[in-house]
Length: 173
Image (cartoon, rainbow, N blue to C red):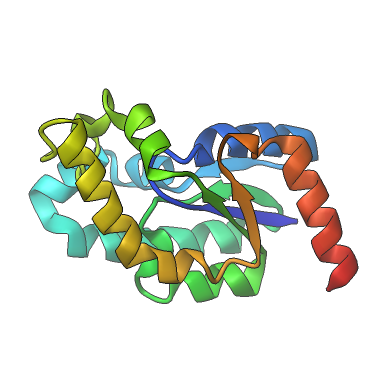
């Protein structure tokens, strides 16, 4: 089984992904962490040195490598992963894709302290600017996120809820 988690930064993809990997007894990978490991530098360093276009190309390469390497995995993608280089098509074709849908207000609360370490949010000066940036980003990405066949909303997205979604999806497919 491959399960891919997509959604905005701060949606809980990594936290839920770790718990799901444990529950399903499969490896867990965080795509950004895989990029950092393979590049031997932080995402912020990659953005600062080589720019977003390089990062997105590398992200696409690493995604395909992880899919090729692991027949079973729970993968937490970066927030923009499904939006570039036909990555969403790779996700949809090779596993179950789950959109973690979290209200912007909740994302702001979760990300206020961590925004400075996230390259695409680092310029946000305060909560109002962070909220505006997140709304703008979500508006651009939602067309991709909404293509995921599975969807789980906000804080109610638990291991048990995802298990039920996967079971219902498999039965109806």
